[in-house]
Length: 208
Image (cartoon, rainbow, N blue to C red; front, side, top):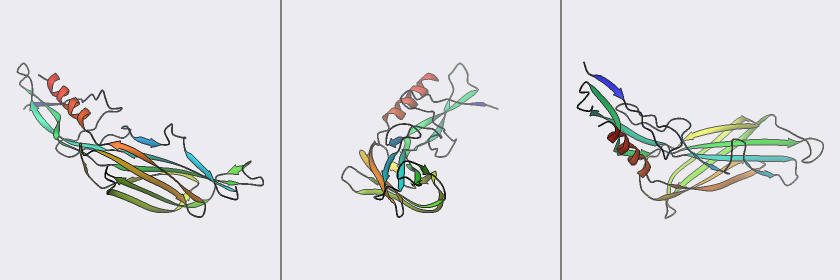
């Protein structure tokens, strides 16, 4: 019986490894590069105060491009005929974006802005629209979240497949704490897949 070896795909131009699944589409592994607004770390957020300065809302957004591909089996080198290996098929590359929203709600106690607490449950509305270069709406997600803690995160699957190399897109996002206010922004994303094709070609060449 032939022995099968799964080839590891090293993507020098990506920030994390891909996670191929044999014979089926595979999204990028957890931790794969995302775009964030505002740029920064886990706790970097946009913020606003209500007009009475009694409530503070903070928000952050992450766009996960979600690269997908299928794997194909290739014969091993002539020196090792018992081996086969799997490599990503560049013809099947596509994107399946996901959206991640974070929020934090603080309430002033006694003195405005001086002392705040994060407590209770809150109604949160998250919204994102993906637009093509001509401003056409390509995908949209919206969730009304009830009973959410004062600080939290919510991931929303996009459910819309985007073909590779279809140009630059804009993501418009917002997080609303009902009754307090809305924070939002935009991100730009390029749908090019050349870095993955290069990685697949490089991996294929290394096996010969």
